[in-house]
Image (tube, rainbow, N blue to C red; front, side, top):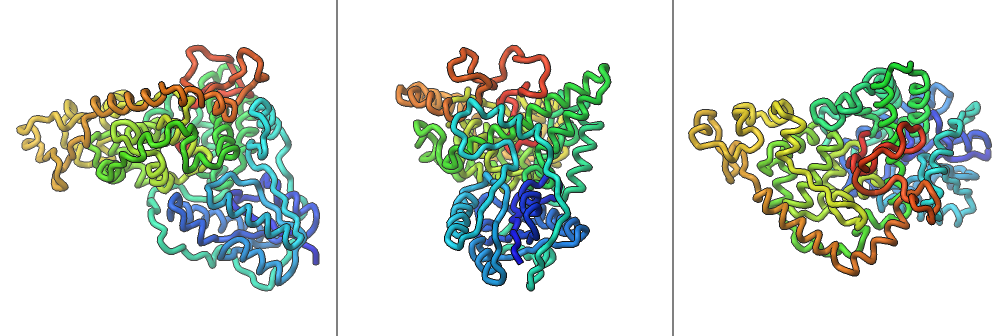
Length: 532
């Protein structure tokens, strides 16, 4: 029997699944997920990612059973698994969505393509996001994004299944060795939870989106919380965009707050693909500076003590340490606090973005490589096209947690600190420390650590070093090529307003009053991991 293999990767759903619809229109299908030991051994994955995938696969298998089929789960390198399937029963075509993943998946897909050619199997990859493979010019990108989002969602024909002799589903999945970190409070996987999350946001929570997403107190409900479901494909981006626009169209004229929240949300959906497109164009930005003129800026000054203080929530800056604890316990943090963590790592702690990014990738349940590495470099100042972004953790605490509710929730020892010294506990007089039953100091026995560096002086020195490098003629000269390659443009390259939206600070004036087409936020508003 001639059949086709549909390879599920980070598209764990049946709805709006272009690859499955394509294959099913040709005849019987075998739905396959491969547990790849090499992928799960990479330094940017964690146990929480594996468990979220397993939960999503279990639900996907149930949905396939309802259609009369099942999900086949195999363990091993992709080419080895495909070779074994082909030896048992040759198939005519391998179909999957395009994936813009980490370096491992990039090389893996090249190997799979070579294998398909060697045995005469068709290898079809279809777009999942508004990311364009082999894009020739950023001038056309926005229009193509809009075309993809406006196109009808993929509709499945009646499914016919090829049943292999060896029938294994998600229940056989075993935890890969060495995987760690599975927060008890993380989101759970599966399409049903994805839909519940989408509808609760569109119907109710979007009213708090504008003004609610910056504070770590309000953001857990004000943000959409769809990022993990988009990362692993429990729901399609096109489905989210179209559902949001349909909700907008149905709103009454007086629902201005609701409308503002949804319009802001759509802009972030646009930026989701904008940043993934950068990694699609230039996979090397996962491991090397986007602007090579910044090579050696921080790499040779690596400080293990600074990195340990950051990852163990012992920097001495309460807002930073509280964010690290929340992230470790939940797998999630809102956009501004993510940016603050990277800013603190890159400037006062002067840490290279690559190891910091690998650690954060394991902490973020919604780790999306294309967004993650672009944002790490942007916040660290190595893109060459972005303004310097430095977040003062004391000011961030004062602005977004003025009563110390967040800090005291995630750092129990801070509950004994009076308000006066809450965000700068190192200034607390010894007699106050004794009265509160606390010690502030350098040793591991101290309840509250001293800051690892002087914030003001370390920040001044780091900014000076970055700006000195930026002022070098060769570094200035390299900026134009990066803008041409990575900045999306609404207009033709000769137009005086050719850059839209720009990769820089938030513009002083809005370019458009309302939009369902163009974003209202620039990347200055965006986040590591993009929770939206």
